[in-house]
Every structure is written in structure tokens, then in C-alpha cells.
Image 1 (cartoon, rainbow, N blue to C red):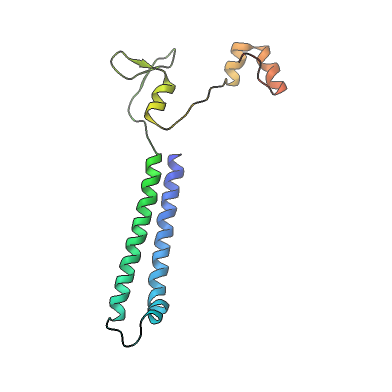
Image 2 (cartoon, rainbow, N blue to C red; image 1 turned 180 degrees about the vertical axis):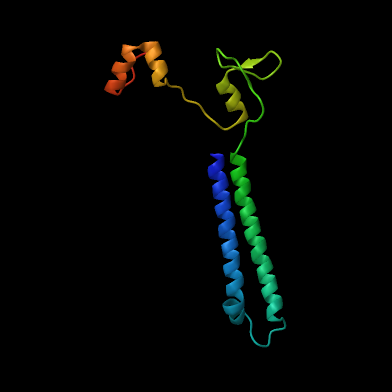
Length: 143
């Protein structure tokens, strides 16, 4: 999951939960409590309103935390300085242990790789054959 997209989603979740909280607190005193409570109730309206508000806040807080925890589980970051071979692009992950970049990233994240050839490398490696296949819309056989 894209980090910016995830942060944007979390901000919207917080906004929605806050808006629901404001709506509930406004509505419970005017509409909900008079319908739930009779005039001879043992509890005061302010006590019941306080309990309802507390329960609603706890529910929204728990819901927001649950959604955020699920989103954060999807985000894995690679941090630090990576030693990458300038020629073969392997990454040094130990003193003298070099791992292909795809393996390194797949072991440390949920990313998957597919391989293809960019236009610059296609022209450099296959020349006219690549240009003909690009014009025809199908990759040349053997690539």
C-alpha cells in the first residue's frame, strides 16, 4: 500500500469518526434521551447522556484504532543505507553476503516483482528487433 494513500485514508477515518461523534453528541440530548427515558426514571438525563457519550467515544476510538492497525500492518518500510553493486545491482546484506535486489526486497516487504525490459534497454540489447516488436504490439520471441 502506498504510504501517502494510507496516511490520507487514516486522516479521512479520523475526520469521519470525529464528525460521527459530534453528530451523536448533538442528537442524543435532543432526540435520543427523551425517547429512551421516562419522566419517572431513577437516573438523570445528564448521567445517561454522559454514559452514552462515553460508550460512543470508546466505540469510535476502538473502531479507528482497529482500522489503523490493519492499515499499518500492510505498510513495511525499508530504511537505512543499502550497499548496492554498481554492476549487477545485488545488495550487501551481511559482511560478504550479496543478495539479488528482488530477493532482498521480497524478504523484507510484501512487494512482488515482475520483469520486463524498458524501451532504452530493449533498443540497446535488441535494436531493430525490439523496435519492430514495439510497433507491432507484441514482444519479440525469446525476450
